Image (cartoon, rainbow, N blue to C red; front, side, top):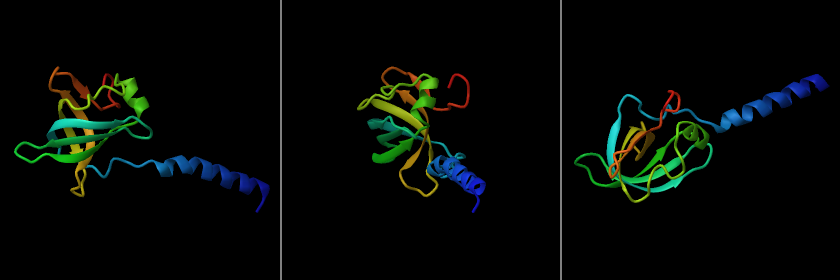
Length: 129
């Protein structure tokens, strides 16, 4: 293998490695939003995605533990979120795109803090959130 070919191979591997670590949001059913009411148990404000542990239920359902995913902390900061935007142990209503496989998880799209009425959207691709 020539020196030039090795350099190209190394460059390709270095470029592809971060892409392999990232996944798409295709595992979420974006055609079927689900609304849950409950409380945030924990917020993991880390890259590559913020993870929220949520205890809640759909209307008429029993409370269950859910794992909700958002975009990166950097993207959320750009639309005004902070690590404490979702209050722990306070009533919250969330709208999610659920996992397609039926597990209790989803992509968080919107959260309403029920005590204050504050609405947080997680659509970081649209200006203003």
